[in-house]
Length: 233
Ligand code: CA
Image (cartoon, rainbow, N blue to C red):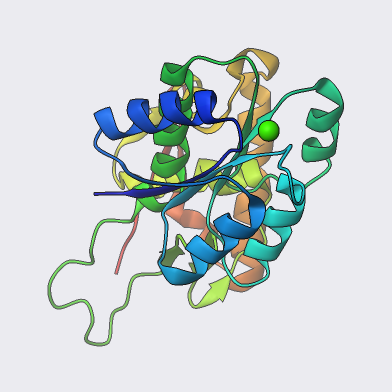
């Protein structure tokens, strides 16, 4: 069962969210203040934090900053105003997301699922038996730090490059069309084009090649179809 920490000072909102998340089989801990939220986080690990920006003792952004000092847990921000949204967008939204109030509990549950799928939920398939002896996987995903390592070196990827690579790595051997990659790696697929995918793939390949020449060949182009991750040992 995945654990969610909800930090929200308005009881009515908190109650509906706790109910909605628990109905979907998440284990929820609710804190009314930023201080209580940080204390709860210090006591036990969580898979995701749902964080209100307007808290009585400190802002949600401050809470996030303190969490991030020691953890890379994904955060879903709840914002009340557009002004708050601008400040969130100023952050590096690696595995994070935000929702503007008023929202429906269903929307929150959907976002929580999407974030977990992108981050902790997209664990790579375990290496086939025997590969640990002398022939390691060329790629390793560390959900906690939201990094993909290539031959032991972390790739310095943008948020979209990271998401794209995770989609491909999640199903080696499967060909993904550009539309499928857009759907899975972009929040708002309508805002970008096929060419955007090509540009991001090119950049990911360049970063792999910088780590080890030839590593970029793991992402293969299937002309007229899309891209596929081919992992050879
Ligand atoms: Ca509030």
